[in-house]
Length: 185
Image (cartoon, rainbow, N blue to C red; front, side, top):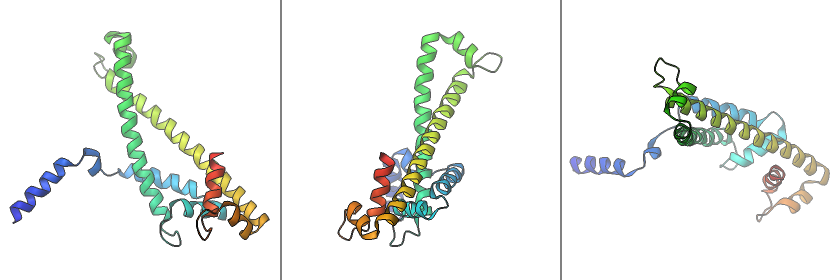
């Protein structure tokens, strides 16, 4: 019985794709927590928008943990995608300019044999930086939209606001829908 279970478990691991078992690194989680703190902000409006976006339980108290988990997974995926794309770019650049010119451009040791690794590393870092900048812009848009929605809700009243933006039966999703529309605009 034990042998059959062990064999089944080993076969199951072989069937899973490599990325399915990988977990985000501590660095990914640390960066994700920083991004979530920044997105959550300090105003009541941005905190409410944060709870609406990430919270999955009734009162949204689990929003920070859900945010960190989602962003850490995104960080890991972005790093993998950036490395893959960087590798492709470096291969094509090496073919275009030739081995010697490529080694002279990127190589840092005596014989320039580390050129490909240095190229991939620099390209991946640049792509990761661009993705992080894009994330920061998106966060600012959501914060701004949350503040505008909070002001609109205060000015028009909760009932009118819920009627305007709410889409479900009890119209309780109005604030989240307002923030989403504002961030996309």
